[in-house]
Structure formats: C-alpha cells, structure tokens
Length: 120
Length: 112
Image: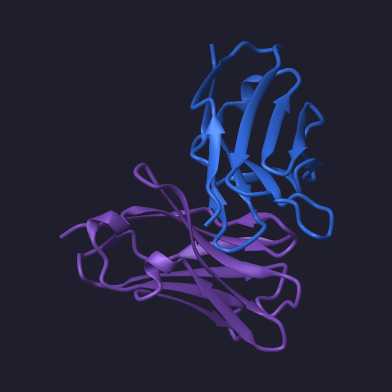
C-alpha cells in the first residue's frame, strides 16, 4: 500500500522560504513509472499544480511557469522522499499544500495535506 | 495551458436521486493512444482529494459502481446514479494530457 506522509512548518514569514517534505512508502521515488507532484489548494486559485519530479534513467523536473523562478522540487533517494521549496513567499502563497503520486494518467495517492500560512 | 470549466458550481441533491456534473476543456484531451486524459476527483470534508474516475471512464479501485464517467474530446460528464450521504464534498475534473496539470473550479455537492 502506497502512502505519502507530509511534514513541514505550517507558518512561514513573508519573504522567507516555504519547505515541505513528502515521505513515500510502498513505492520508490526512483520508480521508472511514477512521478511525484506538488499541488496546492486556496480559495482564490482553487487547485493549482506546482510541479513534479520523476526519474527515467536520470532525474527530470517541471514547474508551473508562474512559479518557475521561486520553486524547487528535489528527490532524496536516501530517505525515499521528495521536497518542495518555495522562495520569497507572500500571503498569496497561503494554501493547503499536497504531494501526490502520478504516472498513469492520474494522481492515485495523495499526502494528508499541510496548511501553510504566510504571515508575520 | 488547458483551461477546465465545470458546471454547476453547486449541486444540492436528494439521497437516492441521480446527479450529474459537467466538465469542458479548452482543447481536446484525446491522446494518440486513444485515451481521453480526463480524471475526476472528490474531496470530502477534511480529507485530501481522491481519484474516482481516470481516463474519462475508468473507475478507480474501491470506487462504488454508482459513479460513472463519460465523454470524449472536450466534453465530459460525471454521473452518480443514486446519491448517498457519504458523496458530499467538492468534485473536481482534471486534465492529465499535458503539463501543467489543470483542474476545474470544483462542484460542491451537498444534501438537500
């Protein structure tokens, strides 16, 4: 059974960096058939895809164009997890953040969600 | 980016009655492999989204058979044959044809 367990702070100050991790069990982040996504949900923007990382003999990543200058998604094979870093946050980055597994045309497993509030 | 438009925004339903949600994409979701890359998700109160239907018409594992998906190209429909109280929540369609993944705005289903 695949499980995704999220961790990270729920409160971040403006201009600082949001950092979340997603620990994977029951699969490998180095799988050749899965990809690993970050998505957020906010009242103003609904569900918004942030980016993904995946391994196909080497590592690839893709990001939402609107965030490309601020976002990094990194795999950590030693811990079998992947992380999200979002720099220079503003109150508009306040949202529920989710990690999810994809790779078969849909997102079949999701993390439990982390509410991140950007406030001083 | 592919834009996804859902309707209605809100859907009050009576238990035992059918319900239907529509989703339209700004471009065809039909891939050269013959599949339409359109999924349906349900976010129940206090939970993460969960997949109900993938590739337009395939029920995900464990999803009751009262849920069905149909459509091709740019027009898709999720149907619930007989709504149950546990079906309340927000339903989203999502296109998986290309990155970025994009979602409909959601349809809130509530019991009358």
